[in-house]
Structure formats: C-alpha cells, structure tokens
Image 1 (tube, one colour):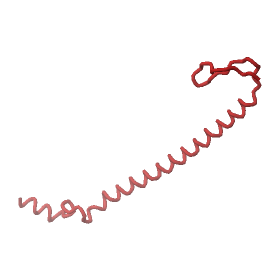
Image 2: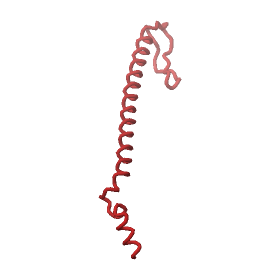
Image 3: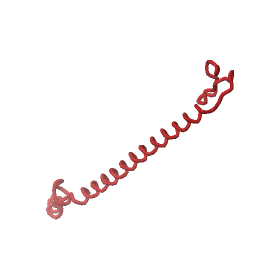
Image 4: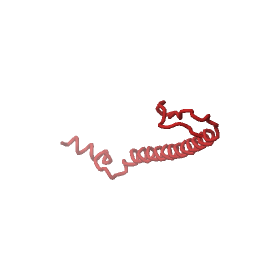
Amino acid sequence: LTVAVFTAAADPDSVLPGSLGRGSWCNEHDTIHERLDIIEEKVIKTVEHLESEVKSLLNIIGETTSNIPIAPGTPLIDIFDGKYQVGYNRS
C-alpha cells in the first residue's frame, strides 16, 4: 500500500485521468483524427470523380449506340445478361 501511495505521488498523471499526462495520448488521438479527416476528404473527392467519369462514359455509350444503324429484323441483345430481349428492331 505504501508503494502504491508513493507511486501515485511520484506520478500523479497515471492516477488522475484529467491531469497533464493526458497531453501525450490526446495529441496522438488528435493526430489520428486529422489523418482520418484527410483520408475521408480524399475518398469523397475520389468517389465524386469516379461518379463523374461513369456518367460521362454512360453518356458516350448512349450517344454511340443510338447512332449505330441496325438492320431491320436484327434481334436486340441485352449486353448485361447476354440473352435476347423481347422483340426485334422493326425500323
């Protein structure tokens, strides 16, 4: 018991959570949150960029496919599952 009292007196920071010893882990905690904020910002910007790229590519695909002449009677193919769609191009 005497050793514990002297230890507490010699190192009060280890006993009192709100004391000056808090600075070290608090700084580390703040640093981690700053890094996480930076990572979050980069992820958000990357997602926004990728969304923009996908929209652009879908627009290009839509414009390209609408300009391709299709012979009458040609079956329309669903490129997502590889099966024929119901109906034919009747133009």
